[in-house]
Image (tube, rainbow, N blue to C red):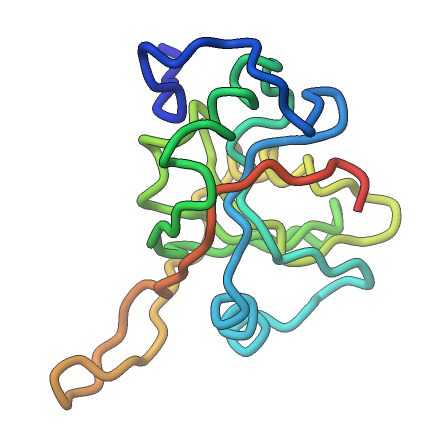
Length: 165
């Protein structure tokens, strides 16, 4: 079942948008604090570091982009968690599994690619996460004055991002 939470009924498609579905994708762009938290907890295992977004739709229709740019969802801050991490040296991929964004995407394995080898592509994280659950993330953090271990909290902003940055 394809979810379309970014589309709001009653908004007319075709409103001119500066963004093209061929050159943009829908994503959650991570906040600077979240990028720093990922860098601190998950150093790059490979030469190519991305770790800056969660892809919601890589090939959105022009209608989806038009509607996003004319809704309150555009540039809305969302909170979510990194729950597991996987590293596959053979494939050259290091990624973290994300929870709390299922209502925003129809992707089976929402994630952030931390880093990848030059021969690998970030999209391979989807295949890796389909094969492995990964290791549970249990980072220490203060909760009401006590140190507890749990998932890594992250924040980001829903945006249409250029495919070639």
